Length: 367
Image 1 (tube, rainbow, N blue to C red):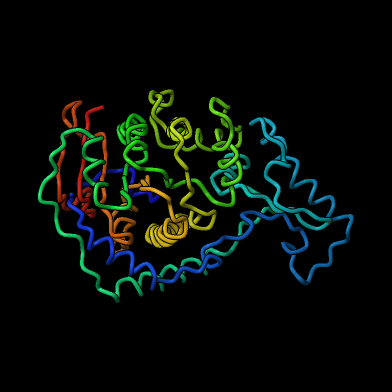
Image 2: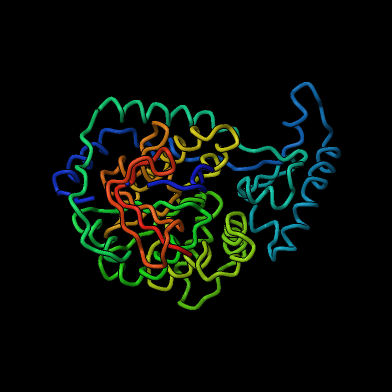
């Protein structure tokens, strides 16, 4: 969710099998500890810990403070059709741990969260990410050759060309874009028929959303999206789209619904720690998220081809941070709303898109 991904760039394409083998062998020598990319409990309410070792709080005071901390959160969750139990990870006489990410907490409690404290694991995560990219850059692996041409003039054809000799494709967007979601939603059935089995998504956090997401995907067709997941995806759409676009059928919620409808597996590409990083600095967010997401894609071992749907600044290298396309040796496609006509304008080997990105292909639409 790199904030620079809201405003917009321009790009490169033609994968050869040997490039895929080079990139696959690289993946094997990069750090890939499963434990290393996990975040801990997102938020904790622990009065004694918050008070510090020098303060001795009685059990009665701790109980009162726990209740005072829980009450406003319970009220807000109930207004959203949820119960506190839906988000509790663990609880005891002196603590309560929940799995809301920072955006969800902001929507419930605003900027004043009282004794609720976020996980402090982000410093270790960012340090691991920095080492990961030092290792990657030291290998000086050859880049994919520029695309000779793209024959297709429509989004489905372009996606198929980019996927033809590759295990996956990274699609980047400005998160306020409509056309990126529209083209992916409208092409989802055809992409499934072309061998795509997995959709990796930014914004979805493993600790916060994996359980409810997987329950939804495994539910019978036509099942309503659980309130926890729908509320969060709606929150994402409301945060990025203009008021007049909020009711469009092309948004984060309908994207996940479309994936379920055609039988795609949807996998989260964030954790609460990678998602909180933008509060620190944009480049740290890019490092943390790209590191975790690259590892998640590799460890997930999709059975077929995959598509990663992320902000454009995560799709390809940005400010010196390698993008997911470079990390996996696949092509990057940016889709935006900056075109001059409703039909797609196709550019390849784009340079300085948004002043900093070099995607392989750019599709632009007038919306």
